[in-house]
Image 1 (cartoon, rainbow, N blue to C red):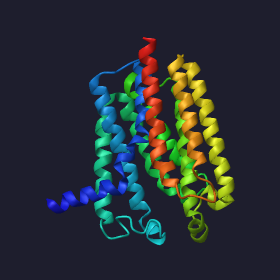
Image 2 (cartoon, rainbow, N blue to C red; image 1 turned 30 degrees about the horizontal axis):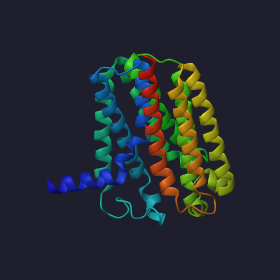
Image 3 (cartoon, rainbow, N blue to C red; image 1 turned 180 degrees about the vertical axis):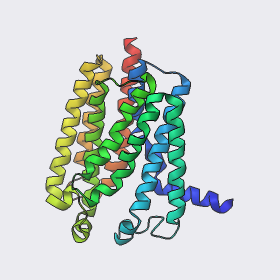
Image 4 (cartoon, helix red, strand yellow; image 1 turned 90 degrees about the horizontal axis):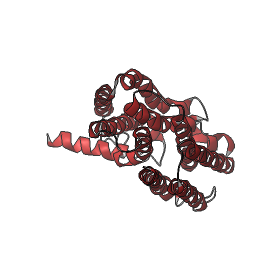
Length: 288
């Protein structure tokens, strides 16, 4: 039992489960918009379970699928599988368990979430192989996170409203943009071994401009979302706050200086997601 607990703790550290905060606030934003306030506690609980289990399955599967690639990269060779802390079999078993929990959560929400859950899993797990096929794998990651708002809306309503797809597109570009920035640190390695990415294909300078354009387009989509859902003043302030935080994120790193990349990638993006959720929640409360 002690060994199992240690392996489980190591697995959670490996997949950085606390980074579920990236997509979760956007899912909760869609949940609030769908319910025009707070939904039933049961619905909220199963959305949390579905989000965390889906993200955990995707990350564990990614570490399983990329174990050999991680072993070749000096930056990732200390990860749990290549370092010998976990076996690939254990990580695959953890992935299967998370998938099972996700399917149970989808079934507990409503019929449509259950029917669509296999498609979600194909997207989440399939992302791990995109870098072997295309330089646009960043968009695959973006879609994986971007599904969260649409899924949460369906979880509440049992149907899909095209308006929430604007938030899905915004999250897709947001996540895809910061993945482009993050992959710049592996530019030399990816060129050497032939892994696809925008930095590998066009260099860090072009990759930075691509990320900036993606984030600029994200801001345009958030403005559109504000009009679609009739935001009042505080909702627009939230969109403005996201813009300021994104600008700061881009200001603290450059193609020639990636020293603060982890701060930009992990800290700032978590803050961005939480800030947007809080402002939208306040907007809904003020408009009631």
